[in-house]
Image 1 (spheres, rainbow, N blue to C red):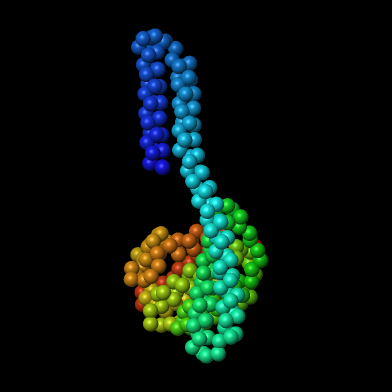
Image 2 (spheres, rainbow, N blue to C red; image 1 turned 90 degrees about the vertical axis):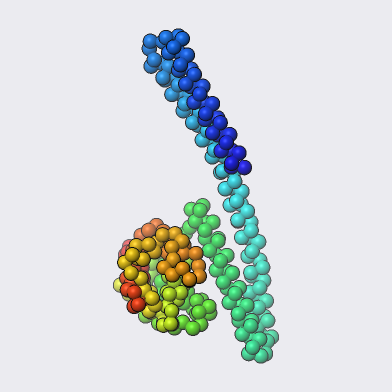
Length: 276
């Protein structure tokens, strides 16, 4: 579709330029027009009109395609909400009917997987709202939000010890976006913890710090960490887009993002929230 459109736009552009050059050649050589100012004014007008037509031919199909894609995403997302809610409701009822510990653990794993699906649903919903600039800011108790995110991740990373030292802090922010940022930072901390399964999380003086005791990074790696798809360790899972998203969110929301790392000693990430 877009390939054929590109060919059509290119041909229209070539024909337009050829026609304009032909008109200019005719008036200069055959008519021998002395005052070229009116001619240039006419040619400029025709050029601008041709540019408008080319832009419209190029943009309209793309805009229609994006609109249809957004509508499909919204409708699909809406359809996903019902089965997720159904699974959550029924797994809760099923757990009450299970007697053995082994069956309870299986049900717990299903429930955790459903929670992960719910998180992906929330993230997709957030991205759609972000594209339509329909994001709301609210008053958030950051210490409670961090506790909630850690409690969720504990279900996934049961081998990790999260050490929390959180002072109360109220901020104005986008709850879903900030939750995604915290999840990404905690997930990275776990990913690079290696054999020391401990993450320290502190909140004081308007700053949230997340420290791991893993492999750490040198100065060269620190310069690349915000590049999309970059990964310090290519053997790690994931697509390397988390920190790119984190930086974009922090820049947009006026949050100071800092990294301190040393090879073999781990990494500390800080989010500093400016006082209102």
